[in-house]
Image 1 (spheres, helix red, strand yellow):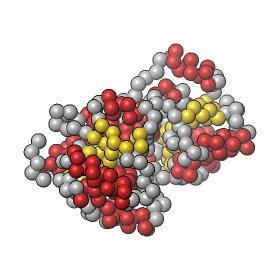
Image 2: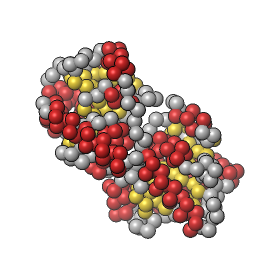
Image 3: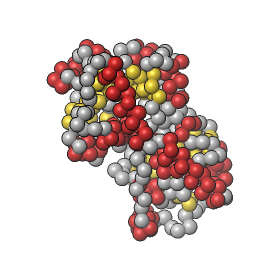
Length: 370
């Protein structure tokens, strides 16, 4: 197995790869990963499982010849039976280098919902996917995009919804200790979000604007993640008079304890392929407020496990927050319903089983005995 992805950092794509590697029978599947770079703590987890990570450096553009040549050299060295790529860089390696290197099974995975993708980029993706044997969509919305806009036929498309393992529950002592450290009182309402701080996509600024509309001093905004827009977000909080209410803790290799501090979880992205952090929040029994974009419309059931709002709408977000803050029993109901849905629909076990089925069926179709 040769996995091709962009950065191994803390994102959903690489975490799904980790679930696959942990869940598949190591006596049958041997895994290696090509990536552009490996950062933070996640690469260590891969290496502890015996997975070799080969970094080839950042792509300047998806079809950069030197990078595809490097990927081809790795393919020739290891001669994988299956190559599985995600994100443009990974898909280009899996399809182009995989085809030239005569890898028997080539799988491409679309992990984002390309709401604003240009016609040129869609055409490029459509061309690349012609070289794939199978194309995986991580949500029904992504499946529909690939089918109707990227022109991938139903027979080549596979819908495999994302999945994650159940979460670790934090002790009362851990929660109280961290709240004290972060300056969160027992009467504060904590609105949280988790993700890379790219505000043009994740829209963390909308959370601050919504809290400004609510005009309540007992609200804390907890953001777990780092990114290029961290400074601008802090500056916005100062402009809005919310600097004492914003808590940014940066990247955290373990997020379970931080979810345990939250009362309401928000994911208000402008675009989202699936929204794995929404599932994590649901597993923590948190009510979720999410935008009607991409996979989030599928993950969060409106008025059941949470509330769906339009993207880029601080007014709608403030109204949704107000309804949950003023009605704790409703918030609790949404939280319990969300956990039940997450355990049933988005488990890591189910995800790995479906990926394994695809791998084995694809090998059989190529008459590769395993």
